[in-house]
Length: 394
Image 1 (cartoon, rainbow, N blue to C red):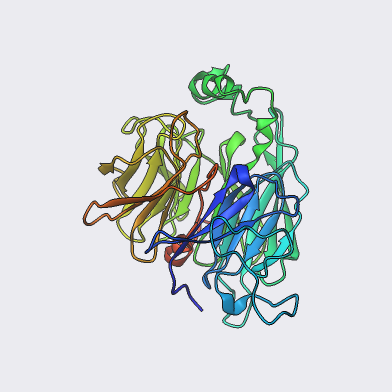
Image 2: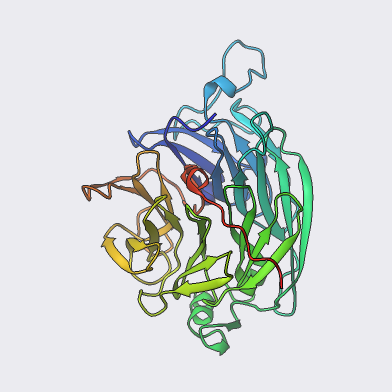
């Protein structure tokens, strides 16, 4: 089955919940805890082809929530489905019957979250996540886990070792030792000395054949996990520090970040970028499935808003002035969504904006709490992702 309703799932990170929002009516239909203790700082949300969502808690743990009442289970046998009906109705852990399962992930950092398409019509979809304990300025190793989408059981674990040992605070590409621009920003924001170097894999996306692409934040490397062989390959990212990652309709990988946009072609192993053509800023990004790459900006620095780039030329086509945007997604109707940074800058609203790229109309939903989502929040990225056969290893 494929997605027929249009929901966007946005993590309320500071509240330990995720919101289910109807993208057509801008109504919040449900809010759910994402970990037994109500903590965990959820961030990445990924929507499967059947519409169900999985949420990664940055402090560990993955939770799946059913999108439709028909799938939810009457666990207490009272003849009805007990589930959240909106923002003010958050059930205690174990009481919401649309929460399918929770899998603990006992790592310091558990960030990427990406559904893969089922390998066959009667096979369960699988779900990728990655976590790290050991990334530092001297060495980095991350674990990639593939979960059964029906049960949440971790079926495969792949250790990606031998990664660069680069602390993106103290030795970033923005100025070498001392961190330059990014290091200065993070130090000023209070991150220096907090173990931020242990982030490891920061974002992930599946291509059309279920292979996982990961961006490793503090090593500035791109990793591909083959869905069939579970072998990994690693490439250096010329842009240095990045943030968002997405796969376009022909299988090219885009990394969007502080220096601009970089595009990787697996067939040639060549990168193209637009460094210097954009204002600095951390950005989530998503293609429209065709010609445009939509990038958010301003949540940490740079130009606020939603910015449209040509996927082939990487030239800026148009910018739209919404608020500061962390994450970007596209809904079933082709509307572009930007999720605010949850108050990253003082005085900024905790909002999500919906842009109609045809009319330019902008509307917003303002009922979020500490929102932080940059990922495939609607399932559109998975639906439109393509595939390119990688160049054989040399």
